Amino acid sequence: MNPSLASLVYACGIAALFYLDRDKSIRTSKALWIPVIYIWAVGSRPVSDWLGGSAYDTGDTAIEGSPIDGTFFAVLWIAALIVLVQRGPRIFTFLNRALPAPIISYFVFCLLSVSWSDYPGPALKKWIKAIGDVMMVLVVLTDEQPVAALRRLFSRVGFILLPISLLFIKYYPNLGRTYEAWSGAQMAIGVTLDKNLLGVITFVISLGAFWRILDLLKSDKKSPDRRRHLIAQGILLVIGISLLISANSMTSNVSCVLGAGLMWAASRPSLRRKPAAVHVLVLSLALGAGLVLLIGGTNAAHALGRNSNLTGRTEIWAAVIPMAPNPVIGAGFESFWLSTWVRDRFAVLIPGLPLNEAHNGYIEVYLNLGWVGLGLIALILSDGYRRAVKAFRREPALGALLLAYVLAATTYCITEAGFRMLHPNWIFFLLAVLEASSIAAGVATGGAPPLNAAPDRALELPARNARAMRTNGRVVAGKIL
Image (cartoon, rainbow, N blue to C red; front, side):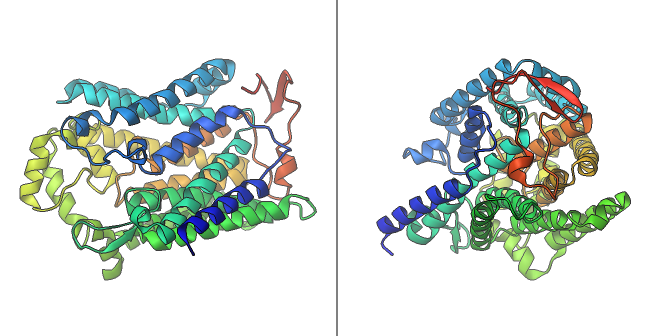
């Protein structure tokens, strides 16, 4: 097919997906478009690259970042901050009762670490960017219909990024494909600049589509909108699977299968009747995924190491761990790879391999924040898991998704640096933990529909200008922004 004709067909297809997935029974805030645009940017190539700039600038730009990208994100952060301030009582209640202490401690320590960084200015800017991730999550979760907002977030992000990635790969290979610098092998990158980023944005959106499908299959079959929602989400999931196969990112593939398997198992009524079975299931899946990623055989090791032309990640890990400037507190927030000494030293240890991450989320945290930061990440993971289990027992459908994201994020970071600002894995992990926390604390401003209820009607709420609404036995005041 001619690329121009293919572009027209895909554009019509994207419009059709939005049309099929429309839902007039819910009214989310227009502010939801702020995190949607944010994730469009985070989950694709930089804005400066779309505008014709270089994605691999060197010198001062490598430390300070692109001014175009900085301005773009600053506008979104200011818009998100305005929305959160206007939401007043809702955001105060959320922060006061549902913001987990480990997350607060982690971000406070990250801010303190700026003081011992060799690059305090860039480190502080990166910390502010990290706070931007939290603000975007809060815009979603403090919507008066947060579950509906979450559903629309998945659709609006997925209906754009995934089909366009497929279009680029099939019909615009100069945009959608590239060659590895070390092996020369061709790889699919879609709207991103790297197959791993394509893999992670695809797997987090595909998990959302799978959650929607499971929920719709359990809903009232007489619902007039059920079939078209199933078609839209089914197409999105098929595109997601196709992209995961094309990207061939083993870490993302394993994380997606792991999360989907957990959601499918959690949808079984027998599991919900046995609370201890949830822990057994999660532990079994985590151990199995870890074994696949670490010692999963020659093919898995080759797939994991193809970007670095190594048989695995172990050579990188062995090289960078001894280079940590301070094992206790690290190099400072996001500062380790800014050091020219580190880059030069690494070039001596493993020649011909330019690198800006450790390809392991836990080692990456250790390098930047030391054992203290790693301990805080462990607290966030354990506390997030506990809250997600509690959310699952209260709201099984939504809780299963939150559990899946916590487990998938934990697994993903075994072989990729996923606990980083402006990274889809980190953003959706924060979203899962904070939503689980709000449910566990009883301050969620909207509930997930039960598995046997029509999702379109279960989320219906009073009129837009209602002064209050009742949720989980509590009254939450406020208007949709």
